[in-house]
Image 1 (cartoon, one colour):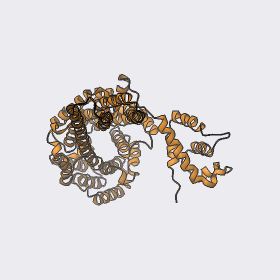
Image 2 (tube, one colour):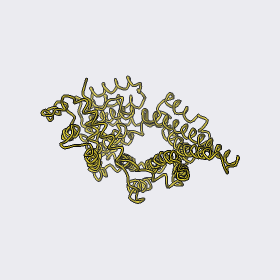
Image 3 (cartoon, helix red, strand yellow):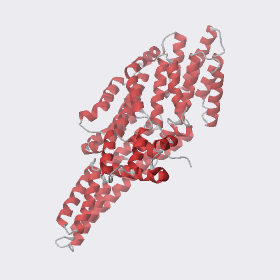
Image 4 (cartoon, one colour):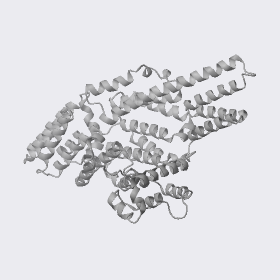
Amino acid sequence: MKPSPHLFQLIQSLTQAEKRYFRIFSGKHVIGEKNNYMVLFDALEKLDAFDEDKLKTLLKDQALLRNLAYEKNYLYEMITDSLHVYHLNPTRESQLKKQLHLAGILFEKGLYIQCQKQVRQVKQAGEELEKYQYVYEALLWQKRLLMQRSYSGVSEAQLQEVFSEITTATEKISNQLAYSNLSETLRFLIDTSGHVRSKEQRKKFDRVVRDPLMKSEARALSNSGKRIFNSIWMNYHFYTNGPISKIIRHTTRELALLEASPALIEETPGLYTGVLGNIIITLLEQHDFEEAQRYLDRLKTWPETLKVKLKENMRMRIFILYYSQQLTLYIESGAFEKLKEVIADVEMGLKEYEGKIGKTHAVTIYYNLAYLFIGTGEYRKALQWLNKILIQKEAEVREDIVCFSRILQLIVYYELNDTDTIPYVIKSTYRYLLKRKRVYQGETVILEFIRMASRIGSRSELLKGYEGLIKKFQKLEKDGFEKNIFVYFDFISWLESKTKGKKFAEVMRNKIRPK
């Protein structure tokens, strides 16, 4: 059996503060010399990469080698126990869990008034945070407290009110979960296929919004359900190339609903970050770059502005969203040269969060960097970032990103005049498209053109080829499905830069108009 790297990965993921706490935590279990699991911890911490043989060499004089698998499991449990204790009470939700547990203890001790106080606080906070499962738990305790006193001093109306509140809480929980499931279904379709390119994909997207819950916001029984309702419609219209007016309407409505619950922003900063991101995407879609930049700046600084302390995973999420959209802004506005202002920060962040960023998010940043380097004419650098996408396992990366990374790779080799490599790349790319059933007109047109153009020696013939290809792409722009290829690369502006003898960025900037 191949040795598992999970323990090594867990140790490498620990912050300095978490490591410091673990040493204090483990010290409570040490008598005299270091215990075996601490010796193992120190050895694994020294490794740069997981290597079972190197680990055994470091532990060659230790008795724990005889039961290494057992010691690893024990250490893993110790670290996770330490993390559990270290991260207790960081949020109001974890405090609610603690209060419910305390309510049970107080009840068993017969301290009913103190129990009632905990229950009342949980119910109030649960409603404020829209965590209706805690409201439900609090109401069950409230009912139990009434029963404990044999309903002394309790009217039937009061009892029925508690029953009604329990029913309402369960309905809200069920309703909230149903909207959440619809949202995750749509997110799965987006993350695996991207923008709709076929009738089959469109049908899958349509099934989500044809659910009865999506007929009206009024069917959502809570603020959170209403936010999810608007988020689903916003994403649906965005990825099916729907009306920009509807995208704007649902995005701004979602932000308004969230800002009506300031406690929720502090408790779940990811929600606020995500909605800001949706607004930025919408503004970029409208080519309102000035306003988009304003929201990007707000996205980057809001934790400091609102004095909210974020954990590493939230800082990472802001990094991903900020730079993926900042790079998109540079692309959409034709400001390719601005890449030099942020490339060092992007590379530093990618290194800091290496192995922690999801594949979809990482390759999106890689793709945008490659696009920008094509725009600045730094083709070798573009190739480096494209290769980072293409070496990933295909099953773990969004299909549309892989597809267009192959197309961009072909464009790079064409720009480099690498006529030896082009035939091989064309062949492998076409094979990939056939295998994935992605042989759309747009991809086929560009493949056939580069195959032909790489053999043309005459400048006049090449110009005719460019002009012919522009006309073909202009027809595709009018096709409801095929036009989505221009989301990934502005093929027409790239070709026009060839025919006009201008820079790619200049052609793009001259064409930009607010949508």
